[in-house]
Length: 232
Image (cartoon, helix red, strand yellow):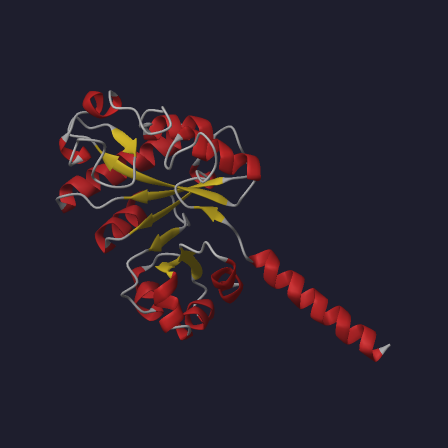
């Protein structure tokens, strides 16, 4: 009986540990046929898998349209933030889709109650521009009734502070850059860190430090089994 209780306890601890581990599809689930990162198809694929979240990167075009794209470059456009939406939209992605708007992403996100949208607000040229983009993003999320289905991440502390100021109280916001220790992040008043795997591998004590401070720990990008097992 004693051995059985010990085994049962071990199984409970194991299940509890795995239950706390969630999967976020980086730029959506695009590593499959006829998809591409940061597209509506990659979001739909993530929703079909019913993963915890689907990450998306947001830039603003020169004419004020919020679009879902990872880097500055798109085809022969060197900087999407200095190009118009029509210029970007006229150039299809490798799978034939066009670069989607944030609004189109939110419309698709609303179709699933299982998969959250993890919005990364990308760095822009001035704090004033970043404040404007944060405001527009949060307002659009509210417009579609998705406040409870969206979390935010950012590399720039200013964007994190503005998200905390503008978004509804309690909205999850995580810092990405990997250079602040958990005590500092706690002082920022946001919900947690979202650091690169290599950062946490070098400083695993930060994981326990975050847990001690009730900070959520996200890790990017974990895409092989050994890394996955270490993170869990």
